[in-house]
Image 1: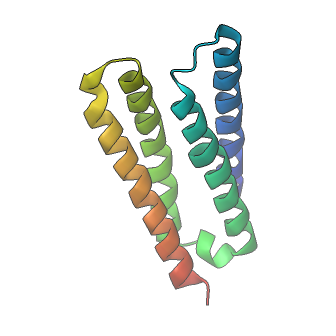
Image 2: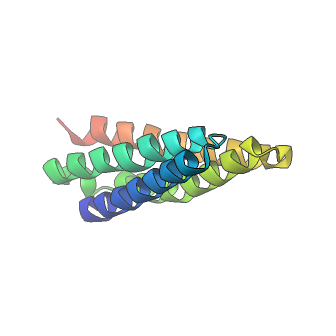
Length: 120
């Protein structure tokens, strides 16, 4: 669990930095919120979850940890794709944005519940 989270965090870091670099080179910053969310929800949040699960393996081995992992990593691409499309003027992408962000939120609620239950 920890290794998967850390590897995905590193991938999100590269994607976020690449997007930021591309925006800087073109001087078009419309997707700055996508860049920021990829950095925080992709890189920082997943890296911290990976480190927490490394330090507390009893939390990493739970069903909640598995559900957290899958919901976060299925919801975040939908969230970021929906956000990017919406920022580029495609208002039809609003439901994607709503669904993806809700799934990520739910994954993080489950992460918190998992920690509260597992760490005593």
